[in-house]
Length: 621
Ligand SMILES: [Zn+2]
Image (cartoon, rainbow, N blue to C red):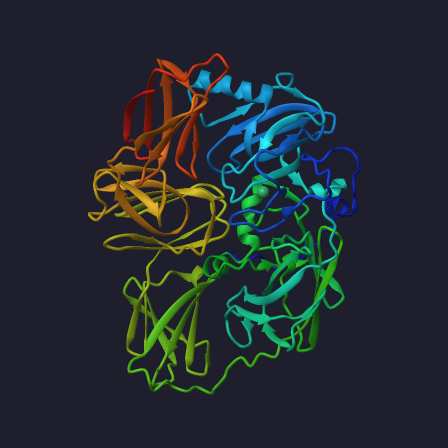
């Protein structure tokens, strides 16, 4: 929330813009055959997912469909994981200076599968990530490399396919003119817009508050009915997506451009995604609203800490009207097929800086105070102040400081405080005291250690997108560490001491276990999210049950309810046997290696959970 100086940065339309209109034909073949027609598309590049932009296309196909190499090259990476991309492989194409990636696979074919098995035996580990040199596994264009599946973080059978530069910038496969990609004429749709105040003096409809507005229209022509009253530095957000005729899915919009009157002040080209910065998606959208309402409002301005290179802008796309005239805002959206939509609206600085229509709420028997942090501003909202609430007292280490009211609307009185001037520990107004739990102002972009009696937090360099006015509130059964409405780019390391943390406890964010170390009287954990943390011990190792042996495959079930399975290994008659784990069904399985391989004898299974509890199981099969 460090407010950027309003210097003018005029960015020349970049290479990304050239990419947008540039199309390449014939360099690659589509990774899956569709003899009967077009592929079924379930995802595209630029689509907003939970914590990243989708960087490839999702092709809906049955598990077991043959996957082909898009061009000649060599297998440069094999990943066998129960999360993320699941079973995944990357082919490097040196002659094209690019790579292609195939994810959520069911099985690797032939020499690729054999290579993986050999490495699993050498390392005695199922989940591995292999970087492979050129010439080890060469492949030809069209060669069958795998069977498609539903492994890792995948909710249905599909192939996730990416084209990348050698330094991992994903490029939209739509630029390669695959004849298998479906055709479409439906332009993007826009549902709502919102304005967001970026400065203590910003107002939207006379208030320092984010306000949403409904959009009307259809078939690519949209508008907002009334003139919106805005003052100061504000940002526009938009709830919009692309649609496909006859599809239940929603898709990402490839290109967004915003004009203030005749001038383009912001554009985003989402046809390429730099993997190293992909998590900046969390500040491309309004993260708080995504968490609260599960709606991804895309910002039409470049927020502080957003390092993506997909934007061209003037003043970061921030709107700041300098007169009282009515101004036009137009937003153009273009989809993967070149279909476009236009949204038009009018804004005006018609701010009545002070409203005197104060109406005390007689139904309240005592005043209520609420607070909110918007960028660098602490906002205190007070209801029912008999004296019209001329001032509130902000307390700093017990010393009270009077703060005049900023504005009043209806039954509400608002006091504003710039947190860069200090962190108050309480506010008093109308005879009510509101305690606050600020600990420290944490700067972004540099490593920072926060230390107090109960809490020590290491903030690595660039882990924050923006300045954090850290709030912490230990409770008897949990720890509130700020709110989960503020995103982190990198994990932070938290050490927490409290008599309420049980012995051998692991830290959880909701039900999600965090990498933790139990300490005497406390716990140390890494987290990539803020919010509420719980602490529970795990002293039970995973349970393994034998299910069946059909001669070709052995099936076992692993039950681990507390923290989660960490490692698993099997030995058949003393020889390492690679196991596969399906996290969706908790099934461990091992296939026979070759026709002569017999699955019979003494099976020894070793399992451990994330808390470090381990156990060996013996089965006679
Ligand atoms: Zn995907």
